[in-house]
Image (cartoon, one colour):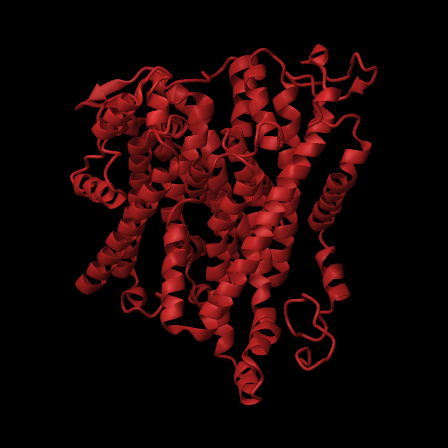
Length: 307
Length: 323
């Protein structure tokens, strides 16, 4: 109960209940097998993204390392370069394993950067909107409603068609599409929290508004947003890969998982299944483990949160 | 009640108006379509003439006003690429997409009983299996699972066709896939498109059931001696359906845009493929019309859902829960 008065900054632990320290929370989180598997695999995949380029046999973006001689090799075959392609090669002769690690790296980078930025922007806007109310609130929420009334894929599609393929544009489009979801949710919690007594108390203490917003309201609004954050990361990965699959996401020179699958589209009919199969499996695995973690967080934080 | 409907109607019209501006501006920025139409040999004078025939030489606001003036009569101009009226292009392809959307919506309704079961027996093995599968379904990119489905069911097993819509029958000038071949063509894209909503329904039904089953009114109904079947299917179900119907209104529009990806993979001749073609060829009128159509359907469905609520649940009509 004394979380707000303590001089040490509160951890991102969502509520001020005394026994809910970060370790306690971690233990409760890992009590479920599903969460253990999900979290373990997630850490493993993120680690692979970080160190991946150091351990894979080839830099798929470096055209000098890629040879057309080696194109469309089946999984397990040995290339002219002398090493074995465990997952085969694609039409350009890229080693699929290397391309997948680089592709995952790019997909995760885009999704994480975009969702985190949308989270930050949406949270600030939602907090201000819920705290001050009035005309500001009305205007912001009308904009958010308009944004949400267009399905995410459609807005992202039109934005990317306007801006052209590119990693930066992709990140921007996802931010534009997702900020409103965060803003709406934070505003809803801020409205509820604002009426509570501890906020009145803080106002009576003449604490600066910035402090009330950040140290009091924000901390108590974070719980549902954390769950939304994990859900939207998973969706952002899917959205990015869908756009890249349609050819308006990442540039051709920097294939993400979606673009790799798209390259494998034509090859499938000729029986070269591996070009589309393996990147897709990795994509599904990543999204799946993020969703497993998100599902457990939802259970712990707020069983009443709508899907 | 009338005031409530009028207020929601006005809100919807304003929303559509804002979206029309956004759609028009965004599409206007995509690029100069004359660059695609004109070939390398065209002289500047020819390009100017092309700009003039397409109306691209006039100021932006004039273009927008002309667009709105026509759009209210469902006239979205002429396609830059095929020189056919956009409304004709769209309405030719619309039945296919509507068919696909409704078909996969019906498939996804299977999630309802599955979710209810998982909510009633949360500790059972089957319930745990259902819930894990639903998380997996959430994580499947439709384009990839579509490819895999083609690979397995069309290429290896040869059970189902992979592309096109099959034979259609024409009734009152609208084509329906009510033939054996048409239905077979609908199976793969329909199921692939349904997966996400299926998972969503499972999760919503389960979570709401878990919540509702422990509330007082359920306990009282049981104490009163109401049969268990009636408690679940009448008392609890009614309360579960309220949030589910709200979300499903929005999901119908999601299915419509999701169809865009699925149609692309299965070579299905719907409006989604039309939109992708329009993006690739900078066919502005078609793209704007597609956006407006999708958002209008979304707004319309939500409006109907809201009005139904206003009738069923007086709390909403009075504005109490409508924040």
